[in-house]
Length: 283
Image (cartoon, rainbow, N blue to C red; front, side):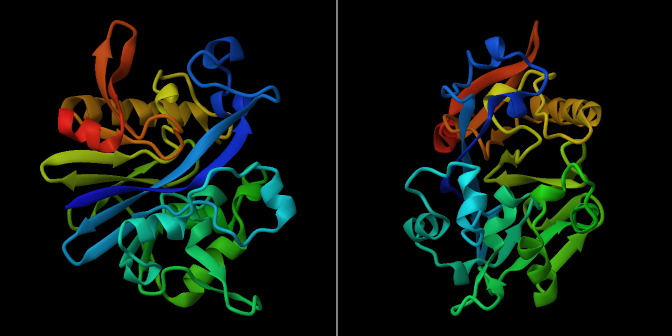
């Protein structure tokens, strides 16, 4: 099995929104922001190559949205989804499976693209099965007012209409060597894939834990719909991660791709962090 980080570019989000009730005097020491209080975040996906299967976990913001929408997020960086796949030796047609952790626009926007004459939409990965949870799909297609702006129908409905959407209704190993675990709090039914990679476990953290800066238990995003549930589900994950020495892969941490955890007097904290291949070699 081969794991390859797939960079799709960066976006800027308000630091206060990303760290919730944590004061700026604290979070700014571990994650920088500019003079407008905007912090820069990766939209990093993960390619899992296992035999004949080429599995992509999340796919960034895409390029379907208009300039006004994208201007709110100050997209930056030279990386693109297709460019990063090409660097990995693949085309979108090679992808056999797409796992969507959840359907917020910065995680699933690359799933769907304009057709050639921009009269409609088509799958960006035409040969892939798209996986997400039934709980998340129901949540995304019947959104609450707080999350509604993050669920864009053009990112979601064309997948179902294509017949390529597969919904899971509970935890399990739906793809060989990848366990789908479900977490609530940020949104409903967020899928956290845990990959059994050559005897080591790697968890794709999505928005359960956007970065190493979010590892202290109360450091939870203001975007989370039910932060107390996030706390409970994080505690569940932490116990497993420490016990099984799981490597955490971060979607949004601009500075670290991966980390491991250990117990300290202050609670669970980072043990090792850095590039994914570096952390894999150490563990």
